[in-house]
Length: 410
Image (cartoon, rainbow, N blue to C red; front, side):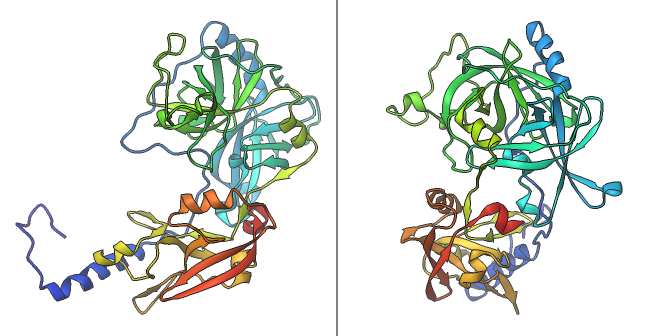
């Protein structure tokens, strides 16, 4: 590798270059990170900047101050209660006097940890409430939790109607090291679909400058009613499609929305209104989980995660994992569908890298992890699928029953 103190690097004989490149890949792979952290919201790319927070003022300041006592900071903790480590932070809010808490499901998912997490709600007075998951909808990124309270707690009413484009809102969150603070903004679009299946569709687009830690927080209108639950953020809002513009080109953005120009950053909230079907399902205890095969994807390195295999990598010194592109299987979850079907863990044996590569599901090619997710999201928990696995020069056809993500990884 060239340093600032070297002139042009020495040219190596051609027959040595592949070996040098292979060693480079191997060294990168040996920087595997063994600890995973929870994802409480989409993280910020290094080269992009979130707009500054606009503090609530006027009517929206009154709304924030009245709603803050009913909002909570949600902490994911690991270890003994007396010395537990906080490994993730999100936001939630009470929706009933007897202790029902609504938040974004990914705030309390925790399956990436492969170990049990305890979730605790901390209110504005720093009272702590252990939380128990009652129900969730992983597709819509909503979760309902229950805590034991000795007296009635303040709670937030849900709006009866959806908001209008251009209306003022305030979100309450815990990003940037803040504790239950307000972020003012406006509704810029409604019915927004994400291009990634991991994120909820039919969301409310906001100009509020939200960040990790705000997920699950309430978004309130001028009447102090909750219109949505904070779910994710985007630095390319022009790539997210409005359902009303579905017949137009993807990414179409009206240049002017009631005097508001769409910025290069936007936040998205899952709409919630009183007595809707989603809330009724959560209150009834229904669980809607995502189907999974049961493995961790690829392997993290010092330069980032390598999830997908492309045969073209081989010319750059990457190990030859077969002729077809696909998703690299990292660690197979014990007892899960992948394990029962015979998929193998990624391994390095005497400088030789071996990994299963999933190249198709039900004969639909999966050259990348987003494509694999897209196929899986069209399936259901318990559904039987045929997985085509590339193991070096051998192709396997494995049949398995898809599992529920939370059950497989907890």
